[in-house]
Length: 246
Ligand SMILES: C[S@@+](CC[C@H](N)C(=O)[O-])C[C@H]1O[C@@H](n2cnc3c(N)ncnc32)[C@H](O)[C@@H]1O
Image 1 (cartoon, rainbow, N blue to C red):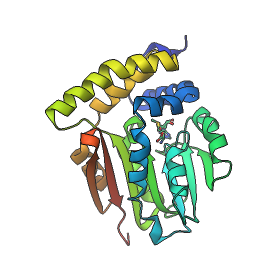
Image 2 (cartoon, rainbow, N blue to C red):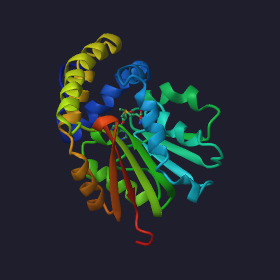
Image 3 (cartoon, rainbow, N blue to C red):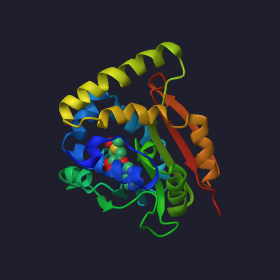
């Protein structure tokens, strides 16, 4: 049994290493579990997120997807009718990228193995950026937001799709029941990983709510950050914009 299978994520650098290892270990089952455990709603959420990117302002531009995993969000961008640009998709868990590679063979998606908190890209180089279910996994989300802000061109948007805890009592009760009791069991059964799908609900519950996350995006340098909830508050989309001129 490996070290990452023995314990749940800690903090700081140790957490980053464990998160990388966790996703490396569940990569072979990630896509299947993603769609099954979300009852396929994740596809709709990704489409909604991409509709906020505003790629039409610079259709031929380069777009960035951080914490790209197996490329589902990057591919949602390139699947937009009339999108002639390209997407650079970065993730620090190589097995996740490797697993998704067959999906991007015919798509203008370039995979890069890199850390969202130290992006290997020049400043002001992307026309927009996305992240799906990734920021919750960062050891320092603020550092990740600052990096995305740095590599975006003035006026560009950053769209963040992330789980959140529903505000309504009934929905929250059903959600916590599903997240804390059903999801970990199914996840453990299918992935064979003893705690990856226990980590998921814990990471959501311990993560800042939508208002706090919007504040963090502003602290990272974004001129504005708005948000809205999806599916009764199970997930949220934040749309942050870099100032037209820095
Ligand atoms: C839940 S998956 C999401 C994958 C994909 N965006 C999606 O929508 O399915 C989270 C991904 O974030 C990646 N990740 C976590 N921390 C990271 C970091 N510091 N730098 C780059 N990738 C990171 C993990 O390796 C994993 O592939």
